Length: 310
Image (tube, rainbow, N blue to C red; front, side):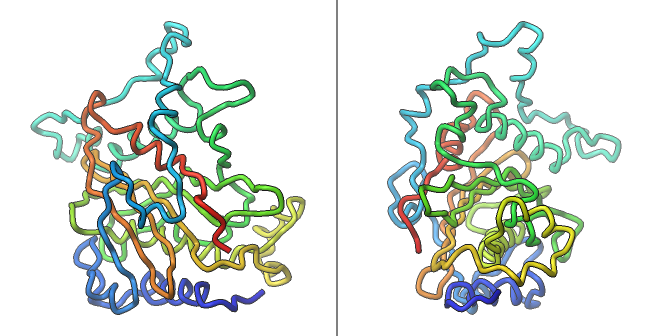
């Protein structure tokens, strides 16, 4: 198994030079230095997910909000004792929330609880009146949840620690489009939680790394029959026996990042002409349920491929 196209080699280089081992100047605390990224042909640009940004949406088609809102969460479908399942914790820490013995409001727990709520929002954890034979919004959008023994997960970098701090990131759920006939799409959508805060106009290493690692895992993903997939995790040496799944040139990635104290933003990355383009939204607040943009983020997390990228 070998990679022989320019996009795959570019992804491998970015993984080796920026993720596995970082240049000293790449990191400023937990954030990445755009000047260093530019040296490696990584360009970060802003985009507005509330407008029709053709650059960011070159490879993804979000679920139309008007369609998504046809299937609202239905508390009336729950038994009274099940209603607490819909509870959402507003971010309202007490004055002593930073005390060592008060872990209830630490950043990692806040983003983890937010991500779990969002996961239920898109993957069927909350009741909705969906079309027949449909179990979730993701199912309705023809998206699969990637889980072991999927060969995409043979790669690393989806859950890791920051190089120079005790902070970490964790990816999940990870979604991919269902195959269409004989065509298999390389697109991936990741929900990533950070246990540190983010700021506008900058990017965390824990956001850059899963984008590049997702591309790398796709570039190296072997074309393994379903019945042999589990054995790959026990005998990774067998991977080289298989052809690559994707003769790819773009490796599109949609990333939903939840950062402290209880915020989120959307990224869309892809390889284009030897350059990694990363579109990044502003930070949105999820501190209050009544104003949190769950539908907006769900529409992007439930994106379908805009077109074939092979």
